[in-house]
Length: 147
Image (cartoon, rainbow, N blue to C red; front, side):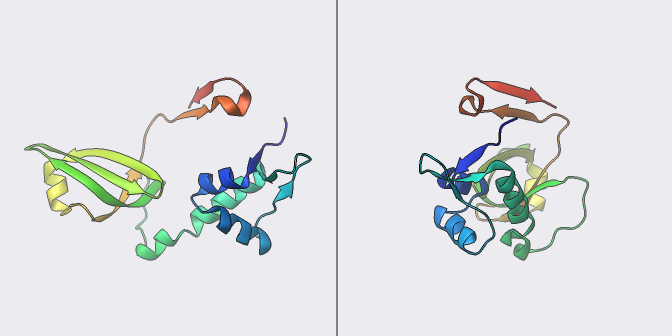
């Protein structure tokens, strides 16, 4: 299996930081940027994965308030960007970093949580099925796997 590399701009987008942040981290020794034979600066995929895990565990969202223990491991701090209530249900749009999440919850729950645009929330994701897709550019063809 060949080692994958990511251009600095792609690496930055994948972990939600700026290109300049990646360059500063490289200057500080937090990540290594290599220059390929073609002159393109890139980061090794395995090293980027390690950096992504590190960034996720030290994310500033933790400063917004610790989370109590829960069985759901996929928890994202975010802000409510839209909410539509009807008599029974509420559609809540949350922006969690670069990710938009949409949840349908009961109107009663939305009211009890006092949710409104601008509310700080934690979105918990727990599912029995998660699909993983590899973009066509990654392998030269479309590919997907479901677990």
